[in-house]
Amino acid sequence: MNRTLISYLLSFALLAASPLVLNRFWLEVLNSVGLYAILALSLNVILGNAGLYNMGHAAFYAVGAYCAAILNTQLDIPILWSLPICGLVAAAAGALVCRPIIHLRGDYLLIVTVGVGEILRIALVNDIFGLTGGPNGIFGIDRPFLFGYKIRKPHEFLYLIWGFVAMTVFLFYRLRNSRFGRALDYLREDEVAAEGSGINTGRTKLMAFAIGAAWAGMAGALYASKMTIISPESFTFWESVLIFIIVIIGGSGNITGVLLGAFLIIGLPEFLRAYVGEFANARMWFFGLAMMIMMIFRTQGILPPGPRFFRLPKAGKEVSS
Amino acid sequence: MEEFFQQLTNGLAVGGIYALIALGYTMVYGVLKLINFAHGDLFTLGAYLGFTLLTSFGLSDRVGPLLGVLILALMVMGLVALVGMILERSAYKPLRQSPRLSAVVSALGASIFIQNSIMLVYGPNIQVYPHNIMPDTVIHLFGMPVPLMRILILVASVVLMVALYLFIQKTRTGTAIRAAAIDQGAAALMGINVDRVIMLVFLLGPALGGSAGLMVGLYYGQVNFTMGWVYGLKAFTAAILGGIGNIPGAMLGGLLLGLVEALGAAYISIAWKDAIAFGVLIFILIVRPTGLLGERVADKI
Image (cartoon, rainbow over all chains, first blue to last red; front, side, top):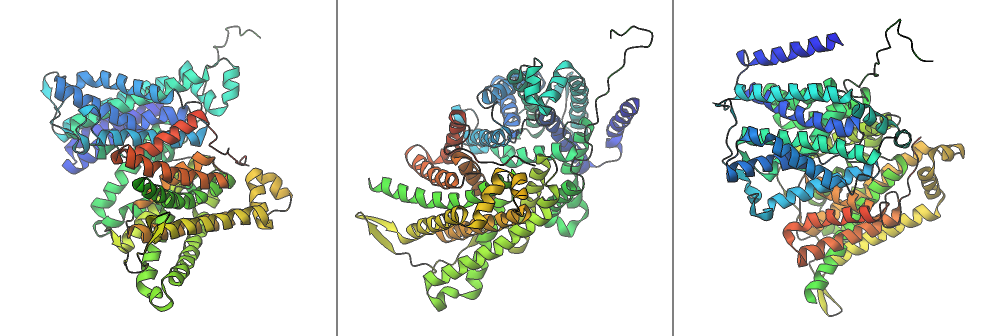
């Protein structure tokens, strides 16, 4: 356990020091890895822990981003203040969408979430309620202010985004080891037995969805403030697929695995783009090939979740037999 | 009335294409419980192979348009079926015993791989089919003009569907496929080579998908390398609409989806066309979670 903690601290220290050696391009890559890491961690609660096949996660990401953008451009609410609101709105959207479909089995849920994502994207393109700006999206979103300091440069965003990642990792680690986290594990492994042991399966699934959606929504708000322009093109089916792939390739259910997955899936194409210049067109071809090979030779993902450990009662204390 | 009739025939033609693709999804899902995300790209491959064969052989100049296109369709179906079989052997077979989502990600990888292979070979631009292959005759049906192409597509897809249905229902091999879809373990005990059944399914499905790709090329006159995503998603929707694993269900679902989409685009809003299709899907799944005709799916061994 301590080794994990030390390696985490070391990695975050390395990330914090990275602006000293990396140029702008690689800092931007790291930022985008961080954003996808937040998204993938949030999907991990739904897909990895609760075992609900959600392939429309970009919908909640979009809800958060548009919520932040609308609050910021129409009501002048600073981005970081709107972060919790965006989370709540996305969570409400998640709960609302999933309430009627939560009982659907595996693949049905998958295709319905794909459908929901597409419907939302089309609604955004069609300028629903006259708020979303149609296919052009919304522009002129403010940069975030932190203690009166405007965050604008890539390395400043690096600290903001990866700070958020660190918080997410901590909270989701605690969540996984909570009563709720154990309930999710149980639910994924055997729904009937979980229900028999007094877990309200419907409510627990809905909670998992709402938590995942809330985090995706906050990632959306960060994204909106980083880009200052958002449009429906950023929230296509492909984004949902990408987040899904990160979770499965990383090792669904394992936080460290998902973080590694984000580095691999988002970082690898950029790496190919930068260093295999003449094959730049073929980078997605390699990517697809790598996905197949990866799944064939490492079916469980890079780092599958290990078994849970429970502390035994201290020696000397009487354990009731 | 005139416009309604046009939308109706258009919807049926597009629906026939959806149904052909949906059959590939539904057969694979019935036997393997795998959403074959690469199926949409096999469909694209069919469209591009049709384009190449069409422009390089000039078949229709030699043997007449109808026979030419028929031979072309058979060639495309054969080639795409071959690719489908290779795909199954290389990307899915090693994953048969692994968690289901691993196979789904492998399928997504295969999809990206095929899509980008097409892009690397043909370039990222839209390819335009030569437009003098099929005569653009307009025939009159019940006093209303209908392009011949539309009717031919509907007829061709119905013929293929009926042929498949008879094959599945009446032949020994078809019975083996149905048995493997109900219970793989029991089928294997009864002396059915489940491995060969799966291979067969991966020959039939892509062949139908490839023919659908050729039809789209002939109908719309242009193809692009990313079109597999949308058609694949719609066709999978159609398969679920009719009840996954259920072959008549896929046909019904495809035709229905095509109709709903065409009529919705005409009478509600064209901008919301795709949203209408998915809205119908969500509605059906809430009201009747197993699809219109009920699902028929194996328990995975």
